[in-house]
Image (cartoon, rainbow, N blue to C red; front, side, top):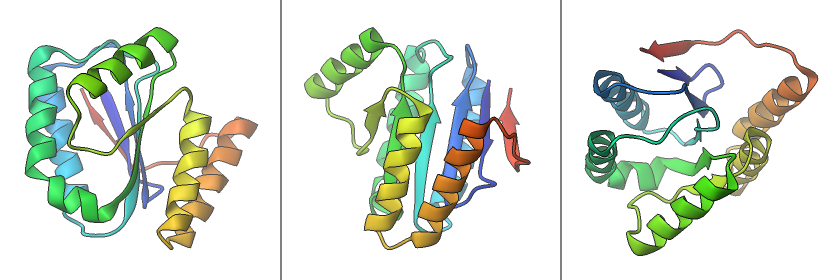
Length: 156
């Protein structure tokens, strides 16, 4: 299952549950396509901290999606962070990325806090100051344990 939260636009957070079916993955990729086609600057954070690895077919769907949207994503995606809290999984991801580089320019980070800190910096570097403000405010709310109302879409 995935939850795609765009309530903090231009910050988009995708949280992935334990496992994901192929139809859920297709639905998520369609939602991401719509976001990219807005043609507005954004930062994407995908939280894999509570999930299992993607299946081979899901990795292929993701690779096809990235290839199809590479030009728009390069122009409008100002940062792409993947949260992987396992040191072993981060190492495996780094080795895989070295052997077969991805078309996206994502960074693997150890926590959602780290992803949000880096996202705020990326917004500032891109001149999207409201995005930096929204991201830092969200990070403060999370640290304080305050739940936010969101416009999220479940993909399950």
